[in-house]
Image (tube, rainbow, N blue to C red; front, top):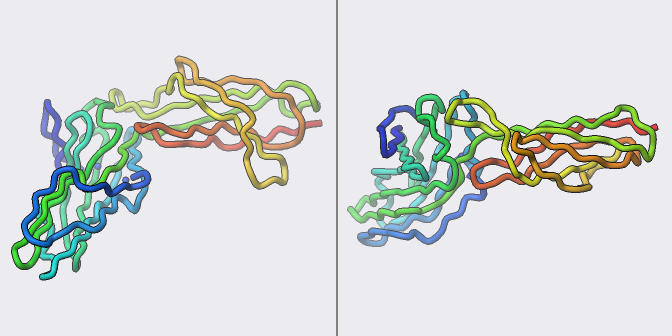
Length: 247
């Protein structure tokens, strides 16, 4: 795999929220070859932290009256002039490319790679027909996120104030550390003891350091958590639940 940027070409190796397969924006076709399905990492998001190596696959399924010979190219490209190539193998009408990404090798100190990426594919049929499809599918490549919570005091008298603090942070590929995610709306949720569904009580916004702080009235025993819906560059995340005993 290669990731190319405007400044460098790095050798190394790099999954999909709600994979969409839109009509290709720039197809070059000869004959009746057509791409019918594209799957990135089983439909999961590509989420990369600060140190752990990530592996994933991109599968391209195509059809042609003569049968599919293979995929000569499956490449990925995204923001920050990001460009990835993988090793490809084919079985029947489906060709799969494998990618491996090491953040400290393949992300040269830049957060610009986070966001929407695209799959380009060149598929060749047994009779020589082919299709080159640009943006055959899109997916999200995201910076890993963390979210904490602490509800206090514990225990607390019914009707008294509970202060709920926490912090939303995400991977920073500039220095390979986690930094607070600022000015983000986060839901404060409650799960009553013995209950099965979380309910949103209110929303809070992260500070310039990514911290959270809000208050609620104690009404019943249960768990408190923060829930972040995510952005194009950062995945959704829920904190663990913090139990508060109400006397």
